[in-house]
Each structure stands twice: as C-alpha cells, then as structure tokens.
Image 1 (cartoon, rainbow, N blue to C red):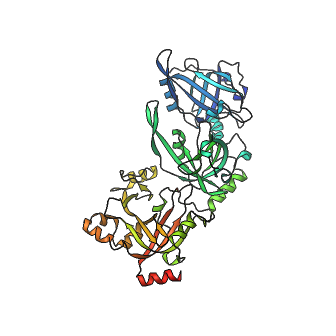
Image 2: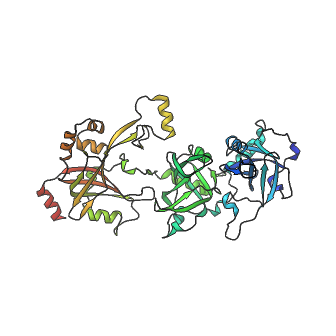
Image 3: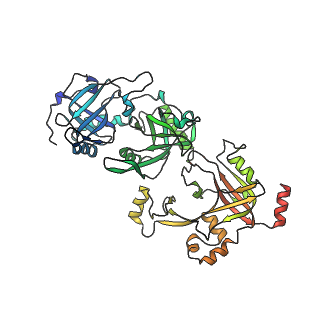
Length: 490
C-alpha cells in the first residue's frame, strides 16, 4: 500500500473540519476502534471491508474515522493500528453527521458519540492512515496523554447501586447506555465462545468477564468485554487499583445472572485510570484500598481458604430455616453468608458411582480447571509455569455433593471439599482415586444413612454467584440418643 507524502502545513486540527473538505489531513490519537466488517461487493464480486477508529487531538473533541477498502487493506489497518497509537490521517473526506435526537438515539449508537458534527471517511486509493513518525516525540507525548484524560465530565456518572436492580420484564426491554466510574475488582480468565453465525470466516470469539465495584455496590457487577484490543489491555488491569471511566457502557438484564450486567458495546469508550485525578477518583481508590476484595469466582464453593473455625459455629438450625435465611422469607440482605449447626442424616454420598467427586485446580492461582484440560487459562499462571516450574500444573481435590435430611426437608446443595474432606475421609483425592471400588463403597457407608452434627457455611446467591452454596466446615457422627436430645431441646 503506497503512501504519498504530505506537507506539515496541510495538517489541520479536528475542530477545523467542515463538510466541504475532500482532502483533509490530521494527526490524532486512537482511543477506540471497531472490529473490521468484511462483506462481498456485489458490483465486482470481491471482498471489501470497513473499520472505524475514534480519534482525538484535544481535551474537548473526539470524532469517528471510517476506513474503506479491499479486505487486505482493512485487515492491514486492523493489525497495524491499536488503541493508544498516534496516527496520520491523509486525504480523508469530511462528512456531516446527524446529531442525536432528544432521546439520545442516532446512528452513533453503532460508534462512539462525536463531539463535532462531522466524521472522517478514508477511501482506499484516495487517502490512507499510517502510524505517526516515531521521531516526533513532542507530538507523540502530547497526544498520548489524552488516553487518560476523559473528554466528558464525571458529573454524568451514575452509581452502581442505582442501576444494578432490574425490574420484572427488564430482559424484554432494549438496553440502556450509561456513564460510570468504577474500580476493577476481579479479572476472570479469557474464554473462547462459538458464534451462532460465523463472521469474517471465524466462528470463535473471545470473551472476558470482569467484576467492577464502587462504594455504593461492593458486591460488584459483571462487566463483559468482547473486543480483542480491550481484552488485551484488560490483562494489565489490577484489581483494587485500576479505575475505569466508562462512557456509554451498555447495561442490560442477564437471564443467566438474573440481574443487570454491563457490557462493552460499539459505542462504548473506556478511559483507564482517568487524569487529572479528581476527588471522586481519590475517594474510590481509598474505598478500594480499605475494602477487602471478595472472591468473585463463579466456583465459589471451592474457595476453602477462609472458612470459619468449627468451634465458632454454634447456631442450631433446621433445613427449612437454612433455606428461609438464604433465599426465603427470613433472608437478610445485609449479610452475604451465615453459619449453622445442622443435625441431620446423610441421604446422598455418591463417591463410588458415576458422579464425579474429584476436581482439578491450578497449583498457582487455585482456580478450578475443567476436567478435559490440564492447564489454567490465566496468563500469569502460564508465564509462571513456563519460567520456573516443571511437572503437573494442577492438583486434584475432593468436591463431593452431600445431601442432608432432617424432619423439615433435605439440604441438596451441601459440598464436602478440600482439606475438610481429606480430614473426614482419612485420605486425599489422589489416594482415593487409587482405591479399589470395594474400598470406595466401604468408605461411602461410613457416612450414608447415618446421623451427624454438621457445621455449615452458607453463601447466599449473588450476582457473582448464581446458586446457593453450602460448604461443610466439619461433621461428627452423633448417636440417636444425642440426636433426640438435641431435637427435643431445640
């Protein structure tokens, strides 16, 4: 792709644009980009494409620049130009755009909102886009500072507590776009998902889920990134330290989480660690520094590092009371979890059947690993193992579903896991897998259909953890005479 030189005197500022210009040139910073859209040109049966870059060259103004060309040209732009690059736009055409209506709706919902009434169009053969000269350090430094300076005031941001509650039927309504100031609380491993319809010949797409919080909502909300560039940048975000000013982030109702969630849309802008640091930013960082980050993992039932001491669990409850406090009429919204002592019979303890009671977890980050894989998806773990580790990168642990029944019902969510399971069973997960089936059956009948005093940690369902989680902290065999005494006094 040959690039024709241009004189410095021809470079204009974005604010100087007007719709009559047909050969406009500027130097600007990329603050957002779209995925390339490739399509078949019916006129000549060749594949063409378009990609959009959102640019700025001052604290006040941003504009969109669409680049059109054959497939190879558009894919070259996508590979060469990233968010944070300073670029030269040469020979662009300036187009007038329709301002948003009173409801804020317009074609700009498919791209970030421009602060000017113009947009740039670069057509292959008439104009081009390239990275700015690396030797022009003054220009590069001046423009790159804009990557952390929001063009929009924080006065428009909402609190998470105001937007996280979804009214009945919210899943049937169109999504809403809002502004937020949040701090990253957790970054989950990148996942690959299959598209229903392949796009540009690719049926796989990447997805990264984060948890973001503010002082009004320490429980957090899920924030999903689909764009490859932002997924790469998010790998460097630090929980409790990275602030995000989100502009026009999409909020919608998730049937999976049964609550509102956030997602990056084609019109969304993200400013990382916004500068200058306002009092609001300082207050949010202070909140994050003084608030312990929670375990926002979907597999929270395997988080066994911070269990309460068994001797501290003394409140006796029935199965019915546990459900009432966790999900029913006695639920306390101010408490995320509680403990209980339950006197019950073990009515399910399937460790010698077809049910899988052994799971894997990463030796580094302790996150669960799918049974069909041997490696963690976390890039930090991959790097650590590649540098100073040999051997298996995972370890096995017990994760046994144990059902407990008393005179009021059956608690079906209880799990016996980790070191607690090792202690009660008298062996670890690796040793268990080497047992003969006859020995596994004998071990099962040490528990099944017998009465126990069971001490439980009950974690209520939240936006980050869809299901009720009940973890066995300790359990002790109890004789029928003691059981009758406990139930009668209770």
